Length: 319
Ligand code: UDP
Ligand code: MG
Image (tube, rainbow, N blue to C red; front, side, top):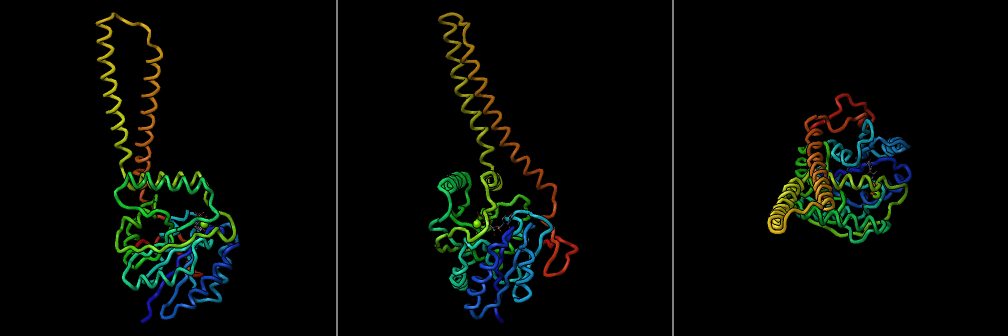
């Protein structure tokens, strides 16, 4: 029996690029014999013509399926929805904007057949991305790597092939605030990297902005490590030690030379400094508390409006 490979494409307002994507994808797929392909689009609440385009593709090509989410949930959720609905023995996640070249797919499948469970594409270069985006992202990886113990792949996006057992593993992680990139590392299994040049997006606009990046960075850190919580304790200890030494010094000085009344500036600095540290610590604790709050609500991750031309009643296809 032929093995099935699902190509999972999360798409949010991508009407401009879908024709190109479909053309390149189908060309690649046609050249790979011995496999059944399923191209699964997850329409993440697009406000443009994305859904209609996908439906048109589906009419002419029966290897296409789609999941239409009930609103925009963000890429992380769109991906897990796709994994829930994917039928393949392997799933390849690829961006709709052609920043991930579909031409790498044959190589991914080859490595999968050689026994790798997670073949991920690592960017050699990033064309069309600003200097600021590149530096902030490399800084973020460094910090994250220092704080967590699981190795997280640098310069790697979500473009990868996952064996069925990785997919099943990821489906069991039902966190609502998802940092999928960390999860790929966390589940483990046999990993293999391939290098590629990342192109600028083919058409349309990126849905990212710096606020979202900061958001993802905080998500990434707080979902994978509690080390920052320890920072506040560490800061507290260091400051206490200094304060203690300072206190001894003040007492000795007072005993030896008599009382010194002045000292308003030093008092102010200490109060302001400690106030700052306290606010930072509270913020860190709050960040984790917020996560606990969100996870304990235990809500379904997403709702599905339509799957392959059929309205979906029980939307959450959990595991
Ligand atoms: N995407 C999505 N939901 C969103 C935002 C983005 O499904 O809320 C999809 C988008 O259609 C694309 C992929 O995620 O296929 C990557 O998005 P984008 O190109 O905007 O991000 P960037 O490449 O700039 O990091
Ligand atoms: Mg992109």
